Image (cartoon, rainbow, N blue to C red):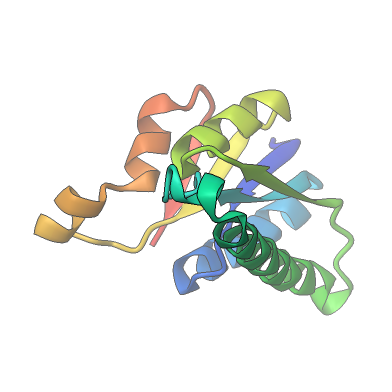
Length: 146
């Protein structure tokens, strides 16, 4: 049914839960799995230009976080002798929701799987919901995993 699944991962507990489901679905359907880590734009405009070490530290930390998140997904793919075609991707300088939707289009994914932290009330209003934004913007089915 699904040929290419895009998993949005950030290494959090919510994305790990989504990764378990994505790996299982990829194995069941014989689908290719792309694990995507999105690096938000550098939050300190102007400072990075006068202090490039701040930007370099931010990007170094982002690359390390991405490697750890991808390693968790790869470990899940290797369990129980599973044979899953896994591709690790990282997108920089985009919001998480835009990076997920853009990559799904570029990679021709036919399903997006994202984890949800389950925030409600004021916290959700203040922080927004990446999952809700992906649902609103995506042109392919989106599975939100709590």
